[in-house]
Image (cartoon, rainbow, N blue to C red; front, side, top):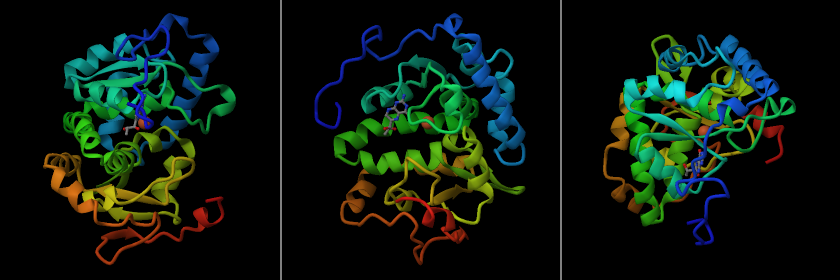
Length: 287
Ligand code: HBI
Ligand code: FE
């Protein structure tokens, strides 16, 4: 169901589960070139900034050699490692379709790639964001289980009317999560690792708050979709994230019903603050 309650039909040419053929042979040389440009930019930044499981996954899947990866090829390795696979979709799919795929260890990925003039930002998730950003972490067995748990939890949250809370969890972990390691802060969120500017901003900029992950705290915090985040939540380990997802969310949702949202840049007395941000970047931007 979409927000207005109408069931959305897949676009012409898509299957009932919204998947399409990747049609890898149909990519043009200039589309492969866009992938390689983006890949090269990120690989120069990510050692020492992205977490080890991400960098290992990137290497294992060999995501650079032929430009845009052939899903059939990466799926052989991915299935062997964690039982996940990547399926092509036309773009954003309805929430319940998205959850159904994740619950079955299938990651829906856009097949299209951004235009050369959109290297730094686009609204819809393309194949670079989805495959470069998300798929390496799916080679990690713990993260792989977390993503499936999110898919399973999605349907439940919809039924309980608390999808807004669960979507914030996805946003601040899967998309914009940071991980504390003995070597320092590292990125695991796909929205960060697939963006040149945010890969630097999230780890090094003095502007954003960086706060220790707390499930309920995260679920009460709205997010920005159109600019760098004003707050990042830092997990101590992927295991801790998976653990947090393996509890009954119904009592948490019930509590959240009576609690106000937390303003995006607020710091609470009970927060464990890693970086108290200046918010200088956000103050200079339209709200
Ligand atoms: N569809 N293709 C795609 N990718 C997403 O990340 C995505 C989606 N549909 C819904 C959705 N994300 C989110 O709104 C849910 O996780 C809440
Ligand atoms: Fe994403």
